[in-house]
Length: 407
Image (cartoon, rainbow, N blue to C red; front, side, top):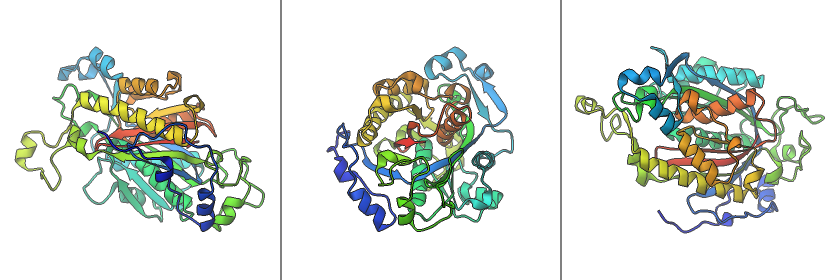
């Protein structure tokens, strides 16, 4: 696919909010991009929020590669081709919303917040409990939160789409405590007789909590006189930052996404698809009999596309943020396949030991994979405040989201 390259000046979009913020972003003098954008997607910047806490949940049942031998799957082949050694599978009666709830509660606990403080809930999932109502509304009811709630379905790119959507609400000043959950029950979407695809997927959920960047998080000390309550956006932006960064609005000195890119290539939709169950192909007995309810993918084509899109979009956001590859502290990619992850990190010229992974223990958990990794790394101390993290989700649609996040 070819397209005309898009310059950073053409595609940079200021975040919504007060005229003071828009004025500051128009006059931004942060470093100019050092690379030419690939033309794959538009670039944006979204600062003004921080991640106050993380959480995750994985079902208790562990299915190892050896457990799949009865289905004709070869354990050594799975490890060589994917890097996966085991995955988690929901218990009978367990649902996507159950996993989302457990991850959300874990996240709120880590942030020192309660459900009644949450004012927006976004759930990224392609395996909702029902076609409607949304998983997010079910989660809202279980939490008892006074909050609007909605689902985002961008498959394995869903968490990044949801994170950017949530960030817009916080950066605008309209929301103060936004819960973002990625949750998917992938095991039930795959045909057990498909020996190449069935071993890849697992079930899990991960969550993050977003707050305005002026709010003290963790061990931060809040600025004198800062109550942490909502106030005028322009006044809040001009206040001293808790960590002493400049308050001139420059992206390099603010929390949030220093650069991001969302993109889609619908022409590749058939490469990753559940054909039946929608309005075009209702799940009739005929569709069910031929396996139309199962997730199908063209593994070879997806592998090549994924490596290219991660490299292109990764270099785009690094250049737009004025960063070099060696300035990145960590890389968190959607946990799809070990070979995809290794090839992508190498293509970006980032040291392999900066790539955070748990694919071997959980498999591909779709929208849950990135927040699951983030939660593990945050809780074991690897991921620290002010670290620069390159994240990228990619999958069915085809769709992707890549960003540089200041933790």
